Amino acid sequence: MSKNTDIEKLESVLIYLVYKSNEIGVYHLNKLTYLFEYFYIKNFGERFTKEYFLKYPHGPVISNYKRIFINLAQREFFLTNTDELKKNRKLTDDYSYGRQAIRSSNKSYFINPLPNNAAILLDNIITKFGKLSVDELETFVYKTEPIINYQNNPYKKETGGYVLESPMINIKKSKDRVPEGIKIALKHMKKYPNFSLEQQKKDYKEFAFMEKLRPYNA
Image 1: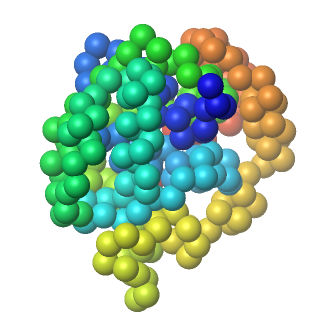
Image 2 (image 1 turned 90 degrees about the vertical axis):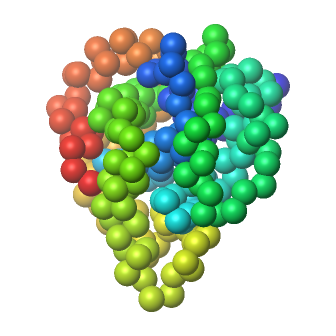
């Protein structure tokens, strides 16, 4: 099996953490992934994945999310109706994917561990945003910096443009704001990830910047 990508790790762990006995819609999965990537930039000054996020009428989506989700479902890292997911839809129909259920499988969390900082940030985002309705989630997403900048960009595409690229968000400026101590800690956590989320939380409390990870404000 080929090495799992960061986006695959992120999607399968997201499914596992909160939706072990429930299910999540494709719409929420796309928006929670966007919020994770956005807050990762704001907190750590870099991207976690190399995925592009496209502006759809109801907010950003992972550019190749169908391929990623179908691939993970075929490998049983999560469960969904892949035939339904393969159907072609209009861009304005992205709301309908809120009803496309994705469920956890026994393999979901074991695709690979996330580094401590990513696991804690993802847990916080799911806790704060995971239970929002489709409308509530869309409202919040539209208040984030990249979407606001995209909407105000006179050269924007109405749909299909990238929302996490310059000038929608200045990654270098975010990186410059990260203290050196956090940068050192990030290198350590990437090198030595833990499988247990509880152990990750326990270890993570030792870092003084824990409060900075909580995405209270966009």
